[in-house]
Every structure is written in C-alpha cells, then in structure tokens.
Length: 271
Image (tube, one colour):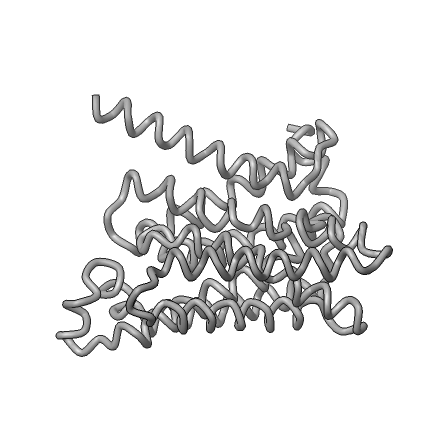
C-alpha cells in the first residue's frame, strides 16, 4: 500500500487533496442543477467568460478572484437580460456573451508581455500550490452553496422540471433562476484558481452526469456526484504523482473517465 500512502505523506499533496475534495463537494452541489437544467453550455461560457476580469485584475494589481467574480457576475447579468428578449433564445445570448467576453480577455492579455504564466494558471490552475487561505475560501464557498441549495431546493426542483408549473405554484422561477446562476458562479469563481477554468467544467459536469444515469432523486445525485468527485480527486492525485502528469488535469480527466464508465455500465444494464 506504499504506492497509495506515500504521495499523501507530502504536505503539499495533502493540501491539494483537501482542496480537490472541497472543490468536488462544491461542484456536486452546483453541477447537479446544471445537469438537471441542461445548463452545461452556460457553465462552460461562464468559466471562460471570467478571463477579462482576471486579466484586468492582474494588470491593476488586484485580486484575480475579485476580477473573476466581477466578470462572472457581469456574464450572469448579461445572460439574464438578453434572455428576456422575445426573439432571442438563451443559448444565443450565452453564445454571444461567451464569444465577446473571451475575445475581450484575449485582447487584454495580448497587450501585455507578462501574462504567459498567469494565463496558464487561469486555464489549468495549480492544485499543488494551494495554501491554507485558499482552503478557507473554498470551505466558506461550500458553506454558502450548501445553504443556498437547502433553502432553494423546492424552487430549483420546480424550475428544473416545469418552469410554467413553478410559476403557477408561486415558486418564483425568475428568482430561482437568478439564485441558480449565483450558485454556478460561486462554484466556478471559488474553484478556478485551484483547478483552472478549463478543468473546473469537468468537475462541474462529469460527476453529476455520471450519477444522473443511475439515480432519479436530486439528493441522491448530489451525494453520488460528491463521492465520484472525491474519488476522482484521490485517483487523479495518485496517477499524477506516479506518472508525473499535471495534477489538476489528471483529476478532471479521471472525473470524465468515470462518466464514460458509468455510461457504459448503464448501457450494459439496460441490455
């Protein structure tokens, strides 16, 4: 069992494991609703749409997390505003804002010669460089996400399955949609500096999607997604340690691989 225990005897690997576990739990809460609502494109767009905020924050010497939060909030507000136009679908609004925000971010980055490392960190994260302060931020974000998920559970369920019926039952679907956008924004912003924007999307989608093939109840999907995410974190760090691969990317790759294993098993069960 030395191959399993040896990596976690190193302090920065233990820190990375705690961070990956917190990110997995956070993404399980938000990602379940993303999968149930069919909002995967929105999650992808928001994760990439943070680039101009991070780039501006770096240029001004401010916190990249604050820049990411500002850009994500602007993205969510824009999607909500454009989605209310009668002749524009939500997918169209998301696509326009996605392209615009990403292009603006690349333009800002291209105006500086010192962004190579920062941009790599934005895209791929650095889970092996997590500090105690980062763990505190992730724990706080997880607590807020759990509270929002608990208080908004009934509204989210009604919104996911029948928005029109939710309105007739007084569930306030617009408020539920805004809270759901806030939950997704919180998960992405809190996690991007750990696993990067390209990889947080995998943890946000793959574990809940894998569990949705086997369970129907929302709490069961969330719990299963959390377990799969934690399993992907442990397995990803082990593979990364022994094979010398990028830790964050390996964790996300294992999470996506678990989805395909789940899909294959579900297919065989159906036959």
